[in-house]
Length: 144
Image (tube, rainbow, N blue to C red; front, side):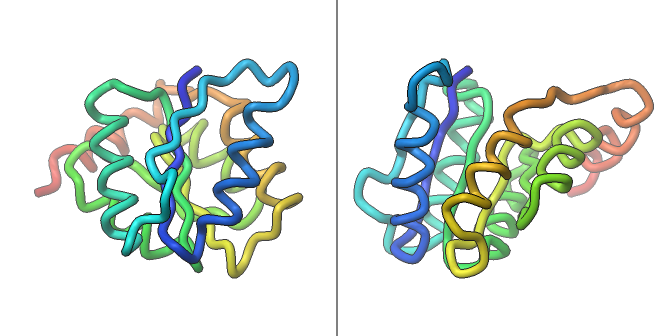
């Protein structure tokens, strides 16, 4: 699975931690770092990640800023993108399973490194369930 990562200055250290974590032994992920240098603003990093995923260059993404909310809001402005701001594992799991999240956003000012590892594991460890949940995604796609 290809995982894209992106961050601004505030999220850069946590992004680097998760990058190393995902590249760890036995993980099996191909990690694509879109912010080898931190973006000037979370809007830049999150929109770049959103387009990268929607263009089919990565399967999922994780974006980082100070609080996570800004990145999630910016990326969700891109038609077809579904990003959730998460601070704990259950939300990361459920937003993927029920809402087909293509990316998650985390705030380095809220989530520490160990918690971020658990969130990423929960997010990447589940697939979208489809079925009755697809109705919501179809409704979102119709919004302009």
